[in-house]
Length: 394
Ligand code: LMR
Image (spheres, rainbow, N blue to C red):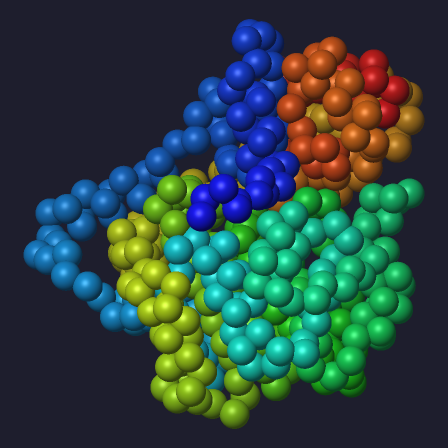
């Protein structure tokens, strides 16, 4: 049997992680996988997470199964964080999933189940695993223009024009904030125009929100999601706690299916639970319990928000430092977009050849599409990167 297996395409982000590990050079800079690192290059366990874990160890009396949807308190806490009061709880079906990727996968399966003819429109570019999972699940993917190669901002006219090619029942995958990989985001006026188009054409939004709190702030980053969720008849939201709680390996995500018809306890909820049962049965609990403990305890929540805000401001400062350094070296403002982008990533918008040159010549590891992880930098490595960018002739 196994002789029939064929090698599958390597995930370019994970392949880069391995290349970085294998590089014997002392001076190398990892700007690849989307993991936050502090100035010392460490991905810390957040203070509130440590405290919540300690509390769980002290107080947890059983590790028996939770429900198929996970602990309902987790869903409630996460819905509050993401949607606040934008949508009535009775309209939201929700299940815990193994990470944001688990939520994305379950969402695609739900789409396939509910409408086998639906196509999913994805931004060009998007997180490569979106496209890979869609292919695996067997859903037709259509790309819409998103990134303007000249301005490195959103090509909004192109996006709208391409979305007009979608037919009723098609799904539009949107990034809630901190677009991965570009760092270029919709403003609220643009979100409103997208909502109008979705409603005009009968399109179903699916929002992937994996970086809430990394862009303009926890509330600001959720504004687009809240607007969409409260303005369309149906939508899907896949959320991740990996980044904003720093609990990557705990695999903590949430999938929501929102219907203005209500039905949180009905078919939508039962279908999400069924999908969990088919794929992995009960979702992981530890990360979800940590998140619930933090969000429901005012002191822990305040401390978590403080640390998250420090993280966000640190990334913004690095963005500004990099843009300033490039301005100094080139005498031009053409890299000013780095300070405008938000979230963990920026897409430099250069060729794979120049990305490779920076890796070979200067030990700079960024994804081949020229996505760089701002959180992989510190004040000392910013000038090294800026010089490498200029030396490579980007
Ligand atoms: C990334 O985009 O680097 C992260 O979302 C990690 C991953 O799983 O690809």
